[in-house]
Length: 218
Image (cartoon, rainbow, N blue to C red):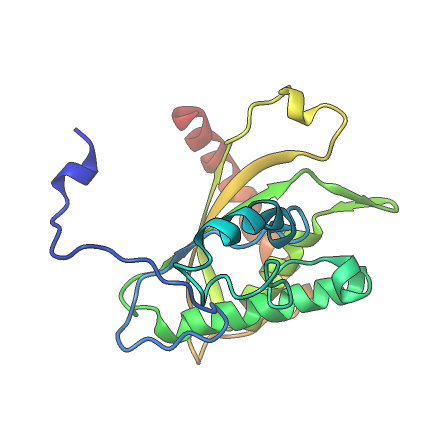
């Protein structure tokens, strides 16, 4: 039986369009978000294709939502180098915007529960002699900058290897769910050297346990 059939429904749900960087909520909430995928998809530009027809058909019914000729793009939280004047400027814009979002969530999240973040990231990007994921790095920087700490990670293989979309392209590789909580005010800080030292001393003894757990659940 599906879990949804056992849920107690006290009132109907509703959907609202709000600016996630400046939430103003009266009571604590639970947040589960699937943030924009950095520079992967220009949602507003793609929406123009449908918007012009929707505006023509429904503009009289929703004049506030369809008051512009095309979809508004200035406030869209994506790292678009063309729109922001270069790759670095786009990265800074995305990181600053996501930091505002996570700070707003931090302020309104129910203290008894974590908020969850679903992120689907692409395959590794090549930079000179190293590999990295700019979108992933920027997302983590935004979380850290908003005094949020990651308490758990759940990687998932959501994409099939060898699929046609993957051929000759930097396609989506896998997905990961993060559980996050506000960082305590008295939480200690560590330098990069201290972190690496603790990682090297604590990780090797735990590796066999991780491997056994993956074998049992895989």
